[in-house]
Length: 385
Ligand code: PMP
Image (cartoon, rainbow, N blue to C red):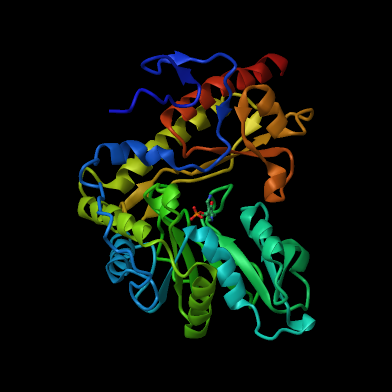
């Protein structure tokens, strides 16, 4: 069972059953703890133990990547049917975060003159890391150039476009909008927990992360599939000079987790069934509450055919993209903060302050607290209107 020395947010007491007063529902981060109960019920099966002498060397393979893990990543995609991988190279990263810049670097022109500098863009609302990271490194060969809408009618070339599908924050499936851009598909959420899988993804550059598929954000493990050999070699170079590959300890842990996930696919203990059912129920309850008044609205998501579950399935998004509809509620994040809910405001995604993002990925406690704090806010509009 759960250790009693450390309670979840907002609870205290010997058995963690006492609710703290003045405690906010913190649904800001995308911490994927909704999967923690799955791994609790697969505790011994998923454990990894290795002794002090084991795997001390820098050397694994020439690319610092476990061949077994590469194979199992490909098995997992084949079993889920969410990506075509046989014709692509595979590179590991310390979280997909490390791969984002590795790919911007690899897709940027070599020996650039300022005319050829790549413009890095994304469509709002977008995941803020793309901008933060591109600005941080600010290489001569690439430059952050803001939202795609600024460039729709421009003659400029050399675009690198981040396409997040399903999108963070609004969970909609997306495609590129700029003709002839080099696209980095961020498929962090393209798993049956979060979305229907209409067809396997087949982009030339696709990023995935263990953070959102098994929930092990702490391990810092992501991977990219890359079609072009030249781009692949540049990413390998980047990994060589940036960190000399991903932690071998992490690779061993992820291999074990993927083996457990693969063994259970299609059965009662399928992690995707678990994740989908949990997030679907959360979305249904949140949806019903928000729709009980006109003060707030949510992004529109429809049931869709899923090749993994082989049926038309309900939405089960990772995030709610909440909009404040009352004229006076100009800053939606602030409206929620006053009501005891910590969310991530629209501005971070380069969207309006009328929007704010609620994470549906955290623990049951976080989610229950969210509903509890949201109820009076929703109800207060019924009285006013
Ligand atoms: N891409 C998207 C769209 C994300 O939401 C996240 C995490 N919130 C990441 C990438 C980064 O994930 P990680 O570095 O943990 O793999």
